[in-house]
Length: 585
Image (tube, rainbow, N blue to C red; front, side, top):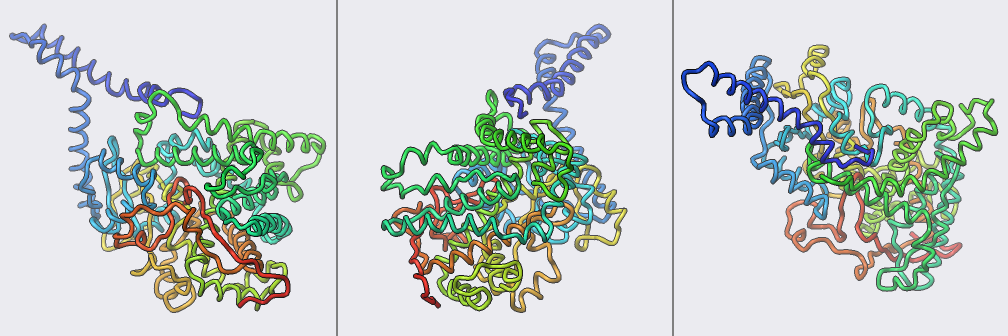
Protein backbone atom coordinates (compact mmCIF):
# COMPACT_ATOMS: atom_id res chain seq x y z
CA UNK A 1 0.00 0.00 0.00
CA UNK A 2 3.01 2.32 -0.26
CA UNK A 3 2.07 3.43 -3.78
CA UNK A 4 0.00 6.44 -2.72
CA UNK A 5 -3.38 4.77 -3.23
CA UNK A 6 -6.02 5.24 -0.53
CA UNK A 7 -5.44 2.35 1.92
CA UNK A 8 -9.14 1.96 2.60
CA UNK A 9 -10.00 1.57 -1.06
CA UNK A 10 -7.23 -0.97 -1.54
CA UNK A 11 -8.50 -2.79 1.53
CA UNK A 12 -12.05 -2.85 0.15
CA UNK A 13 -10.81 -4.07 -3.22
CA UNK A 14 -9.31 -7.03 -1.42
CA UNK A 15 -12.16 -7.83 0.97
CA UNK A 16 -15.27 -6.93 -1.09
CA UNK A 17 -15.08 -10.17 -3.13
CA UNK A 18 -14.66 -11.96 0.18
CA UNK A 19 -18.00 -10.50 1.27
CA UNK A 20 -19.76 -10.28 -2.09
CA UNK A 21 -19.32 -13.87 -3.25
CA UNK A 22 -21.13 -15.49 -0.26
CA UNK A 23 -23.91 -12.90 -0.56
CA UNK A 24 -24.27 -13.55 -4.28
CA UNK A 25 -24.31 -17.30 -3.74
CA UNK A 26 -26.98 -17.02 -1.03
CA UNK A 27 -29.07 -14.65 -3.13
CA UNK A 28 -28.96 -16.87 -6.22
CA UNK A 29 -29.61 -20.00 -4.17
CA UNK A 30 -32.71 -18.50 -2.57
CA UNK A 31 -34.01 -17.21 -5.90
CA UNK A 32 -33.51 -20.61 -7.51
CA UNK A 33 -35.12 -22.26 -4.51
CA UNK A 34 -38.24 -20.18 -5.13
CA UNK A 35 -38.62 -21.93 -8.48
CA UNK A 36 -38.68 -25.37 -6.89
CA UNK A 37 -40.20 -24.95 -3.45
CA UNK A 38 -43.96 -25.15 -2.93
CA UNK A 39 -43.80 -21.87 -0.98
CA UNK A 40 -42.32 -18.52 -1.91
CA UNK A 41 -39.47 -17.23 0.17
CA UNK A 42 -40.35 -13.59 0.91
CA UNK A 43 -38.01 -10.66 0.20
CA UNK A 44 -37.79 -9.83 3.90
CA UNK A 45 -35.98 -13.16 4.29
CA UNK A 46 -33.89 -13.00 1.10
CA UNK A 47 -32.52 -9.51 1.64
CA UNK A 48 -31.25 -9.98 5.25
CA UNK A 49 -29.89 -13.43 4.38
CA UNK A 50 -28.01 -11.91 1.44
CA UNK A 51 -26.66 -8.96 3.42
CA UNK A 52 -25.58 -10.97 6.45
CA UNK A 53 -24.28 -14.04 4.64
CA UNK A 54 -20.62 -13.15 5.14
CA UNK A 55 -20.93 -12.10 8.82
CA UNK A 56 -22.84 -15.29 9.57
CA UNK A 57 -20.18 -17.36 7.81
CA UNK A 58 -17.46 -15.42 9.66
CA UNK A 59 -18.90 -16.05 13.11
CA UNK A 60 -19.77 -19.63 12.26
CA UNK A 61 -16.30 -20.37 10.90
CA UNK A 62 -14.70 -18.60 13.87
CA UNK A 63 -16.78 -20.67 16.25
CA UNK A 64 -15.96 -23.87 14.35
CA UNK A 65 -12.28 -22.89 14.15
CA UNK A 66 -12.10 -22.38 17.91
CA UNK A 67 -13.63 -25.81 18.51
CA UNK A 68 -11.39 -27.48 15.93
CA UNK A 69 -8.28 -25.86 17.38
CA UNK A 70 -9.16 -26.90 20.91
CA UNK A 71 -9.66 -30.47 19.71
CA UNK A 72 -6.39 -30.39 17.77
CA UNK A 73 -4.55 -28.96 20.77
CA UNK A 74 -5.99 -31.63 23.06
CA UNK A 75 -5.04 -34.37 20.61
CA UNK A 76 -1.44 -33.18 20.59
CA UNK A 77 -1.29 -32.62 24.34
CA UNK A 78 -1.01 -28.88 23.74
CA UNK A 79 -2.83 -26.00 25.38
CA UNK A 80 -4.58 -22.89 24.06
CA UNK A 81 -3.25 -19.57 25.30
CA UNK A 82 -5.81 -17.76 27.50
CA UNK A 83 -7.82 -14.99 25.86
CA UNK A 84 -7.73 -11.37 27.03
CA UNK A 85 -11.19 -10.50 28.32
CA UNK A 86 -11.81 -7.39 26.21
CA UNK A 87 -13.34 -6.53 22.86
CA UNK A 88 -11.24 -5.97 19.74
CA UNK A 89 -12.07 -2.26 19.79
CA UNK A 90 -11.05 -1.95 23.45
CA UNK A 91 -7.76 -3.76 22.82
CA UNK A 92 -6.93 -1.70 19.74
CA UNK A 93 -7.93 1.49 21.56
CA UNK A 94 -5.64 0.65 24.50
CA UNK A 95 -2.66 -0.06 22.24
CA UNK A 96 -3.17 3.10 20.18
CA UNK A 97 -3.65 5.13 23.37
CA UNK A 98 -0.29 3.88 24.61
CA UNK A 99 1.40 4.83 21.36
CA UNK A 100 -0.12 8.31 21.55
CA UNK A 101 1.01 9.09 25.08
CA UNK A 102 1.09 6.14 27.43
CA UNK A 103 3.99 4.29 28.98
CA UNK A 104 5.63 1.92 26.45
CA UNK A 105 3.97 -1.51 26.45
CA UNK A 106 2.01 -0.82 29.66
CA UNK A 107 -1.12 -2.63 28.48
CA UNK A 108 0.89 -5.71 27.50
CA UNK A 109 2.25 -5.79 31.04
CA UNK A 110 -1.26 -5.54 32.47
CA UNK A 111 -2.57 -8.31 30.21
CA UNK A 112 0.36 -10.53 31.22
CA UNK A 113 -0.53 -9.98 34.88
CA UNK A 114 -4.13 -10.96 34.16
CA UNK A 115 -3.53 -13.88 31.81
CA UNK A 116 -0.03 -15.16 32.43
CA UNK A 117 3.17 -15.02 30.40
CA UNK A 118 1.47 -16.13 27.17
CA UNK A 119 -1.96 -14.96 26.06
CA UNK A 120 -4.01 -14.19 22.98
CA UNK A 121 -6.42 -11.43 22.00
CA UNK A 122 -8.94 -10.78 19.28
CA UNK A 123 -8.07 -7.93 16.90
CA UNK A 124 -11.11 -7.61 14.62
CA UNK A 125 -10.52 -10.23 11.92
CA UNK A 126 -7.67 -12.15 13.57
CA UNK A 127 -6.24 -13.39 16.85
CA UNK A 128 -2.81 -12.35 18.11
CA UNK A 129 -0.61 -14.23 20.57
CA UNK A 130 1.83 -12.43 22.87
CA UNK A 131 4.44 -14.14 25.00
CA UNK A 132 7.27 -13.38 27.37
CA UNK A 133 8.04 -17.05 27.98
CA UNK A 134 11.71 -17.48 27.01
CA UNK A 135 11.20 -20.97 25.62
CA UNK A 136 8.42 -19.87 23.31
CA UNK A 137 10.50 -16.85 22.29
CA UNK A 138 13.43 -19.15 21.58
CA UNK A 139 11.26 -21.34 19.36
CA UNK A 140 9.88 -18.37 17.48
CA UNK A 141 13.17 -16.51 16.93
CA UNK A 142 15.56 -19.42 16.58
CA UNK A 143 14.55 -23.07 16.87
CA UNK A 144 11.45 -22.81 14.67
CA UNK A 145 12.59 -19.74 12.74
CA UNK A 146 11.36 -21.11 9.41
CA UNK A 147 7.82 -21.42 10.78
CA UNK A 148 7.58 -17.70 11.56
CA UNK A 149 8.07 -14.58 9.47
CA UNK A 150 7.21 -10.90 9.58
CA UNK A 151 4.19 -11.77 7.49
CA UNK A 152 2.10 -9.90 4.93
CA UNK A 153 0.17 -7.89 7.53
CA UNK A 154 3.29 -6.43 9.17
CA UNK A 155 4.93 -5.80 5.80
CA UNK A 156 1.82 -4.00 4.58
CA UNK A 157 1.57 -1.89 7.74
CA UNK A 158 5.14 -0.64 7.40
CA UNK A 159 5.40 -0.64 3.61
CA UNK A 160 4.71 3.09 3.28
CA UNK A 161 7.69 3.84 5.53
CA UNK A 162 10.17 0.96 5.13
CA UNK A 163 9.26 -0.55 1.76
CA UNK A 164 11.08 -3.80 1.11
CA UNK A 165 14.12 -3.05 3.27
CA UNK A 166 15.73 -5.55 5.61
CA UNK A 167 13.43 -4.85 8.58
CA UNK A 168 10.33 -5.31 6.49
CA UNK A 169 11.31 -8.24 4.30
CA UNK A 170 10.85 -12.00 4.40
CA UNK A 171 12.14 -14.92 2.37
CA UNK A 172 14.60 -14.33 -0.44
CA UNK A 173 14.39 -10.54 -0.19
CA UNK A 174 15.40 -10.70 3.49
CA UNK A 175 18.26 -13.08 2.66
CA UNK A 176 19.41 -10.67 -0.06
CA UNK A 177 19.55 -7.71 2.32
CA UNK A 178 21.11 -9.82 5.06
CA UNK A 179 23.90 -11.15 2.86
CA UNK A 180 24.58 -7.66 1.58
CA UNK A 181 24.94 -6.01 4.98
CA UNK A 182 26.79 -8.77 6.87
CA UNK A 183 30.29 -7.99 5.46
CA UNK A 184 30.05 -4.41 6.71
CA UNK A 185 29.87 -5.34 10.38
CA UNK A 186 33.12 -7.28 10.74
CA UNK A 187 35.48 -6.53 13.61
CA UNK A 188 37.85 -4.66 11.30
CA UNK A 189 35.15 -2.26 10.18
CA UNK A 190 33.37 -1.64 13.48
CA UNK A 191 36.63 -1.21 15.44
CA UNK A 192 37.64 1.83 13.37
CA UNK A 193 36.64 4.57 15.81
CA UNK A 194 37.92 7.51 13.76
CA UNK A 195 34.41 8.50 12.64
CA UNK A 196 33.08 8.34 16.19
CA UNK A 197 35.97 10.47 17.40
CA UNK A 198 35.35 13.30 14.93
CA UNK A 199 31.58 13.32 15.39
CA UNK A 200 31.76 13.08 19.19
CA UNK A 201 34.27 15.94 19.30
CA UNK A 202 32.00 18.12 17.18
CA UNK A 203 28.91 17.32 19.27
CA UNK A 204 30.61 17.97 22.61
CA UNK A 205 31.95 21.27 21.32
CA UNK A 206 28.37 22.34 20.59
CA UNK A 207 27.29 21.25 24.08
CA UNK A 208 30.09 23.22 25.76
CA UNK A 209 29.19 26.33 23.80
CA UNK A 210 25.53 26.11 24.82
CA UNK A 211 26.37 25.45 28.49
CA UNK A 212 28.72 28.45 28.47
CA UNK A 213 25.72 30.56 27.47
CA UNK A 214 23.86 29.33 30.55
CA UNK A 215 21.26 27.13 28.84
CA UNK A 216 20.44 23.42 29.07
CA UNK A 217 20.75 21.17 26.01
CA UNK A 218 18.44 18.64 24.42
CA UNK A 219 20.62 15.55 24.89
CA UNK A 220 18.33 13.44 22.70
CA UNK A 221 18.75 15.89 19.83
CA UNK A 222 22.52 16.11 20.33
CA UNK A 223 22.88 12.32 20.43
CA UNK A 224 20.61 11.97 17.39
CA UNK A 225 22.89 14.26 15.38
CA UNK A 226 25.95 12.30 16.47
CA UNK A 227 24.39 8.95 15.51
CA UNK A 228 22.95 10.29 12.22
CA UNK A 229 26.25 11.75 11.06
CA UNK A 230 28.23 8.70 12.20
CA UNK A 231 25.82 6.24 10.56
CA UNK A 232 25.60 8.04 7.23
CA UNK A 233 29.37 8.34 6.92
CA UNK A 234 29.99 4.74 7.98
CA UNK A 235 27.27 3.19 5.81
CA UNK A 236 27.06 5.56 2.86
CA UNK A 237 30.45 7.27 2.75
CA UNK A 238 28.65 10.61 3.02
CA UNK A 239 27.94 12.39 6.30
CA UNK A 240 24.80 14.53 6.18
CA UNK A 241 26.55 16.81 8.70
CA UNK A 242 23.48 17.43 10.84
CA UNK A 243 25.77 18.76 13.58
CA UNK A 244 26.41 21.76 11.33
CA UNK A 245 22.83 22.88 11.98
CA UNK A 246 23.74 23.62 15.59
CA UNK A 247 21.55 22.99 18.63
CA UNK A 248 18.09 24.30 19.49
CA UNK A 249 17.57 26.52 22.50
CA UNK A 250 15.09 25.45 25.20
CA UNK A 251 11.45 26.14 24.22
CA UNK A 252 11.27 29.16 26.55
CA UNK A 253 14.09 30.72 24.53
CA UNK A 254 13.06 29.35 21.13
CA UNK A 255 13.32 32.84 19.61
CA UNK A 256 17.11 32.53 19.93
CA UNK A 257 17.19 29.50 17.63
CA UNK A 258 18.10 30.79 14.15
CA UNK A 259 15.83 30.13 11.18
CA UNK A 260 18.68 28.26 9.50
CA UNK A 261 18.33 25.55 12.16
CA UNK A 262 14.73 24.80 11.24
CA UNK A 263 15.40 24.78 7.49
CA UNK A 264 18.51 22.60 7.67
CA UNK A 265 17.83 19.47 5.52
CA UNK A 266 18.70 17.11 8.37
CA UNK A 267 16.10 18.68 10.67
CA UNK A 268 13.38 18.45 8.03
CA UNK A 269 14.32 14.79 7.55
CA UNK A 270 14.36 14.01 11.29
CA UNK A 271 10.94 15.55 11.89
CA UNK A 272 9.36 13.70 8.96
CA UNK A 273 11.05 10.42 9.89
CA UNK A 274 9.77 10.66 13.46
CA UNK A 275 6.19 11.42 12.42
CA UNK A 276 6.24 8.58 9.91
CA UNK A 277 7.38 6.12 12.59
CA UNK A 278 4.62 7.22 14.98
CA UNK A 279 1.90 6.55 12.40
CA UNK A 280 3.48 3.29 11.24
CA UNK A 281 3.66 2.06 14.85
CA UNK A 282 0.01 2.98 15.34
CA UNK A 283 -0.89 0.75 12.41
CA UNK A 284 0.67 -2.25 14.11
CA UNK A 285 -1.58 -1.62 17.08
CA UNK A 286 -4.64 -1.47 14.83
CA UNK A 287 -4.06 -4.97 13.51
CA UNK A 288 -4.63 -6.31 9.98
CA UNK A 289 -7.60 -3.97 9.45
CA UNK A 290 -5.50 -0.81 9.99
CA UNK A 291 -6.48 0.54 6.55
CA UNK A 292 -9.98 1.25 7.86
CA UNK A 293 -8.42 3.92 10.10
CA UNK A 294 -6.70 5.62 7.12
CA UNK A 295 -9.45 5.08 4.63
CA UNK A 296 -8.92 7.84 2.08
CA UNK A 297 -5.25 8.73 2.55
CA UNK A 298 -1.98 6.97 3.27
CA UNK A 299 -0.89 9.25 6.10
CA UNK A 300 2.68 7.90 6.19
CA UNK A 301 3.50 8.52 2.52
CA UNK A 302 3.94 12.33 2.74
CA UNK A 303 6.55 11.82 5.44
CA UNK A 304 8.30 9.09 3.45
CA UNK A 305 8.37 11.49 0.47
CA UNK A 306 10.25 14.01 2.63
CA UNK A 307 12.66 11.29 3.76
CA UNK A 308 13.28 10.32 0.13
CA UNK A 309 14.12 13.92 -0.74
CA UNK A 310 16.82 13.64 1.90
CA UNK A 311 18.22 10.27 0.77
CA UNK A 312 18.08 10.75 -3.01
CA UNK A 313 21.13 13.10 -3.10
CA UNK A 314 23.07 10.53 -1.05
CA UNK A 315 22.20 7.83 -3.60
CA UNK A 316 23.00 10.13 -6.54
CA UNK A 317 26.43 10.93 -5.13
CA UNK A 318 27.15 7.22 -4.58
CA UNK A 319 26.05 6.42 -8.14
CA UNK A 320 28.40 9.07 -9.52
CA UNK A 321 31.30 7.69 -7.47
CA UNK A 322 30.46 4.18 -8.60
CA UNK A 323 30.35 5.20 -12.26
CA UNK A 324 33.86 6.59 -11.98
CA UNK A 325 35.02 3.18 -10.76
CA UNK A 326 32.54 0.98 -12.62
CA UNK A 327 35.16 -1.57 -13.58
CA UNK A 328 36.18 -2.16 -9.97
CA UNK A 329 34.20 -4.47 -7.70
CA UNK A 330 33.53 -2.63 -4.44
CA UNK A 331 33.76 -5.63 -2.13
CA UNK A 332 36.30 -4.98 0.58
CA UNK A 333 36.88 -1.29 -0.10
CA UNK A 334 33.65 0.58 -0.55
CA UNK A 335 30.65 1.53 1.54
CA UNK A 336 27.53 -0.49 2.04
CA UNK A 337 25.68 1.74 -0.39
CA UNK A 338 28.35 1.24 -3.08
CA UNK A 339 28.18 -2.49 -2.53
CA UNK A 340 24.41 -2.32 -2.94
CA UNK A 341 24.94 -0.56 -6.27
CA UNK A 342 26.91 -3.60 -7.42
CA UNK A 343 23.70 -5.61 -7.04
CA UNK A 344 20.99 -3.23 -8.20
CA UNK A 345 20.28 0.25 -9.52
CA UNK A 346 16.58 -0.01 -8.77
CA UNK A 347 15.88 3.39 -7.17
CA UNK A 348 13.10 2.06 -4.94
CA UNK A 349 15.24 -0.73 -3.49
CA UNK A 350 18.05 1.75 -2.90
CA UNK A 351 15.79 4.23 -1.14
CA UNK A 352 14.13 1.52 0.95
CA UNK A 353 17.48 0.15 2.07
CA UNK A 354 18.74 3.56 3.14
CA UNK A 355 15.61 4.22 5.20
CA UNK A 356 15.89 0.84 6.93
CA UNK A 357 19.55 1.39 7.71
CA UNK A 358 18.80 4.82 9.13
CA UNK A 359 16.25 3.28 11.50
CA UNK A 360 19.03 1.09 12.87
CA UNK A 361 21.97 3.46 12.51
CA UNK A 362 20.32 6.58 13.89
CA UNK A 363 17.03 5.84 15.65
CA UNK A 364 17.85 2.72 17.66
CA UNK A 365 21.28 3.86 18.84
CA UNK A 366 19.91 7.31 19.67
CA UNK A 367 17.25 5.72 21.88
CA UNK A 368 19.87 3.41 23.41
CA UNK A 369 22.14 6.33 24.32
CA UNK A 370 19.40 8.76 25.32
CA UNK A 371 18.04 6.49 28.00
CA UNK A 372 21.56 5.67 29.22
CA UNK A 373 22.29 9.39 29.70
CA UNK A 374 18.94 9.80 31.47
CA UNK A 375 19.95 6.99 33.84
CA UNK A 376 23.27 8.74 34.53
CA UNK A 377 21.35 11.88 35.54
CA UNK A 378 19.13 9.82 37.84
CA UNK A 379 21.92 7.74 39.40
CA UNK A 380 25.02 9.83 40.22
CA UNK A 381 26.51 6.87 42.09
CA UNK A 382 26.75 5.01 38.79
CA UNK A 383 28.24 8.07 37.09
CA UNK A 384 31.08 7.88 39.62
CA UNK A 385 31.65 4.17 38.96
CA UNK A 386 31.58 4.67 35.19
CA UNK A 387 34.11 7.49 35.33
CA UNK A 388 36.39 5.52 37.64
CA UNK A 389 36.42 2.61 35.17
CA UNK A 390 37.04 5.00 32.28
CA UNK A 391 39.96 6.65 34.08
CA UNK A 392 41.40 3.23 34.98
CA UNK A 393 41.17 1.81 31.44
CA UNK A 394 41.29 4.84 29.13
CA UNK A 395 42.43 7.78 31.23
CA UNK A 396 40.85 11.18 31.84
CA UNK A 397 41.41 12.31 28.25
CA UNK A 398 42.62 9.32 26.24
CA UNK A 399 40.91 8.27 23.02
CA UNK A 400 39.17 4.89 23.49
CA UNK A 401 40.37 1.92 21.49
CA UNK A 402 38.65 -1.33 20.56
CA UNK A 403 40.53 -3.07 23.39
CA UNK A 404 39.46 -0.37 25.87
CA UNK A 405 35.82 -0.87 24.97
CA UNK A 406 36.09 -4.62 25.56
CA UNK A 407 37.67 -4.01 28.98
CA UNK A 408 34.89 -1.73 30.27
CA UNK A 409 32.81 -4.39 31.99
CA UNK A 410 30.73 -2.05 34.12
CA UNK A 411 30.04 0.21 31.13
CA UNK A 412 28.62 -2.78 29.25
CA UNK A 413 26.54 -3.76 32.29
CA UNK A 414 25.31 -0.18 32.62
CA UNK A 415 24.16 -0.10 28.98
CA UNK A 416 22.47 -3.48 29.38
CA UNK A 417 20.81 -2.29 32.57
CA UNK A 418 19.47 0.80 30.80
CA UNK A 419 18.14 -1.33 27.97
CA UNK A 420 16.56 -3.82 30.37
CA UNK A 421 14.28 -1.27 32.04
CA UNK A 422 13.35 0.61 28.88
CA UNK A 423 13.79 -1.38 25.67
CA UNK A 424 14.78 0.88 22.78
CA UNK A 425 13.29 -1.35 20.11
CA UNK A 426 9.63 -1.72 20.94
CA UNK A 427 7.58 -4.85 20.25
CA UNK A 428 7.32 -4.14 16.51
CA UNK A 429 10.79 -5.40 15.64
CA UNK A 430 9.97 -8.72 17.30
CA UNK A 431 6.56 -9.20 15.73
CA UNK A 432 6.31 -12.42 13.76
CA UNK A 433 3.58 -14.36 12.03
CA UNK A 434 3.25 -18.09 11.66
CA UNK A 435 4.02 -18.62 7.97
CA UNK A 436 3.26 -22.34 7.98
CA UNK A 437 1.82 -24.81 10.43
CA UNK A 438 4.21 -24.43 13.41
CA UNK A 439 3.42 -27.98 14.43
CA UNK A 440 5.37 -29.06 11.35
CA UNK A 441 8.44 -27.44 12.84
CA UNK A 442 7.63 -29.05 16.19
CA UNK A 443 7.63 -32.46 14.57
CA UNK A 444 11.04 -31.69 13.09
CA UNK A 445 12.32 -30.92 16.60
CA UNK A 446 10.11 -32.98 18.95
CA UNK A 447 12.37 -32.46 21.98
CA UNK A 448 11.66 -28.73 22.03
CA UNK A 449 8.47 -28.79 24.07
CA UNK A 450 8.21 -25.28 25.51
CA UNK A 451 6.77 -26.24 28.90
CA UNK A 452 4.71 -29.15 30.16
CA UNK A 453 2.62 -28.66 27.03
CA UNK A 454 3.26 -27.27 23.58
CA UNK A 455 1.63 -23.94 22.85
CA UNK A 456 -0.93 -24.25 20.08
CA UNK A 457 -0.32 -21.57 17.42
CA UNK A 458 -2.34 -21.37 14.23
CA UNK A 459 -1.06 -20.12 10.91
CA UNK A 460 -1.26 -16.30 10.63
CA UNK A 461 -1.17 -15.66 14.37
CA UNK A 462 1.35 -13.12 15.55
CA UNK A 463 3.69 -13.40 18.49
CA UNK A 464 5.48 -10.21 19.55
CA UNK A 465 7.48 -10.75 22.71
CA UNK A 466 8.04 -8.94 26.01
CA UNK A 467 10.43 -10.66 28.38
CA UNK A 468 11.20 -9.76 32.02
CA UNK A 469 14.60 -10.24 33.65
CA UNK A 470 13.62 -11.78 36.96
CA UNK A 471 11.27 -10.62 39.71
CA UNK A 472 12.84 -7.13 40.02
CA UNK A 473 13.20 -6.62 36.27
CA UNK A 474 11.97 -3.01 36.28
CA UNK A 475 14.50 -1.87 38.89
CA UNK A 476 17.49 -0.18 37.25
CA UNK A 477 20.45 -2.20 38.49
CA UNK A 478 23.44 -2.73 36.16
CA UNK A 479 25.00 -5.15 38.65
CA UNK A 480 22.40 -7.77 37.67
CA UNK A 481 24.65 -8.28 34.61
CA UNK A 482 27.74 -8.81 36.77
CA UNK A 483 26.76 -10.64 39.97
CA UNK A 484 25.15 -14.01 40.71
CA UNK A 485 21.88 -12.95 39.07
CA UNK A 486 23.62 -13.14 35.70
CA UNK A 487 24.16 -16.88 36.21
CA UNK A 488 20.81 -17.42 37.89
CA UNK A 489 18.62 -15.81 35.23
CA UNK A 490 20.38 -14.85 32.03
CA UNK A 491 22.97 -17.59 31.51
CA UNK A 492 20.48 -20.49 31.58
CA UNK A 493 17.83 -18.47 29.69
CA UNK A 494 19.56 -16.08 27.25
CA UNK A 495 16.25 -15.39 25.49
CA UNK A 496 14.94 -13.44 28.51
CA UNK A 497 17.18 -10.56 27.40
CA UNK A 498 17.79 -10.12 23.69
CA UNK A 499 17.50 -6.37 23.01
CA UNK A 500 18.99 -6.81 19.55
CA UNK A 501 16.70 -9.71 18.67
CA UNK A 502 18.02 -13.27 18.38
CA UNK A 503 18.35 -16.18 16.02
CA UNK A 504 18.86 -15.66 12.27
CA UNK A 505 17.38 -12.14 12.50
CA UNK A 506 19.73 -10.98 15.25
CA UNK A 507 20.85 -7.43 14.58
CA UNK A 508 24.08 -7.42 12.58
CA UNK A 509 24.86 -3.98 14.01
CA UNK A 510 24.68 -5.08 17.65
CA UNK A 511 28.39 -4.64 18.34
CA UNK A 512 28.44 -1.48 16.20
CA UNK A 513 25.75 -0.01 18.48
CA UNK A 514 27.55 -1.07 21.68
CA UNK A 515 30.84 0.37 20.43
CA UNK A 516 29.27 3.63 19.31
CA UNK A 517 27.33 4.06 22.55
CA UNK A 518 30.34 3.15 24.69
CA UNK A 519 32.65 5.50 22.79
CA UNK A 520 30.23 8.40 23.15
CA UNK A 521 29.64 7.83 26.87
CA UNK A 522 33.40 7.65 27.47
CA UNK A 523 33.90 10.99 25.75
CA UNK A 524 30.88 12.50 27.51
CA UNK A 525 32.08 11.42 30.96
CA UNK A 526 35.62 12.59 30.22
CA UNK A 527 34.29 16.09 29.51
CA UNK A 528 31.25 16.52 31.79
CA UNK A 529 29.97 15.70 35.27
CA UNK A 530 26.94 16.49 37.48
CA UNK A 531 24.27 15.49 34.96
CA UNK A 532 20.94 17.03 36.02
CA UNK A 533 17.50 17.16 34.44
CA UNK A 534 16.24 20.60 33.50
CA UNK A 535 12.96 20.18 35.36
CA UNK A 536 11.55 23.47 34.02
CA UNK A 537 11.92 22.38 30.41
CA UNK A 538 11.37 18.61 30.28
CA UNK A 539 7.83 17.42 29.67
CA UNK A 540 6.75 15.73 32.91
CA UNK A 541 5.10 12.32 32.83
CA UNK A 542 1.30 12.10 33.30
CA UNK A 543 0.30 12.68 36.93
CA UNK A 544 -1.28 9.21 37.08
CA UNK A 545 2.14 7.60 36.71
CA UNK A 546 3.07 8.63 40.25
CA UNK A 547 0.44 6.24 41.66
CA UNK A 548 1.38 3.27 39.48
CA UNK A 549 2.80 0.02 40.80
CA UNK A 550 5.31 -0.51 38.01
CA UNK A 551 8.21 1.36 36.41
CA UNK A 552 6.07 4.41 35.62
CA UNK A 553 6.09 5.66 39.22
CA UNK A 554 9.85 6.43 39.23
CA UNK A 555 10.11 8.14 35.82
CA UNK A 556 10.88 11.87 35.80
CA UNK A 557 10.29 12.32 32.08
CA UNK A 558 7.56 11.32 29.65
CA UNK A 559 8.71 8.25 27.71
CA UNK A 560 6.92 7.10 24.57
CA UNK A 561 7.54 4.71 21.72
CA UNK A 562 6.99 4.39 18.00
CA UNK A 563 9.32 1.93 16.27
CA UNK A 564 11.80 2.93 18.98
CA UNK A 565 11.63 4.64 22.35
CA UNK A 566 11.81 8.45 22.42
CA UNK A 567 11.27 11.41 24.72
CA UNK A 568 8.64 13.78 23.28
CA UNK A 569 9.95 17.32 23.44
CA UNK A 570 13.48 16.10 24.11
CA UNK A 571 15.67 15.21 27.11
CA UNK A 572 16.88 18.55 28.47
CA UNK A 573 19.94 18.31 30.70
CA UNK A 574 22.48 20.52 32.44
CA UNK A 575 26.06 19.36 32.97
CA UNK A 576 29.22 20.77 34.47
CA UNK A 577 32.29 20.84 32.24
CA UNK A 578 35.42 19.13 33.57
CA UNK A 579 38.30 21.52 33.02
CA UNK A 580 41.54 20.34 31.31
CA UNK A 581 43.85 18.64 33.79
CA UNK A 582 41.04 18.24 36.35
CA UNK A 583 40.45 14.72 37.65
CA UNK A 584 36.84 14.31 38.71
CA UNK A 585 36.02 11.20 40.71
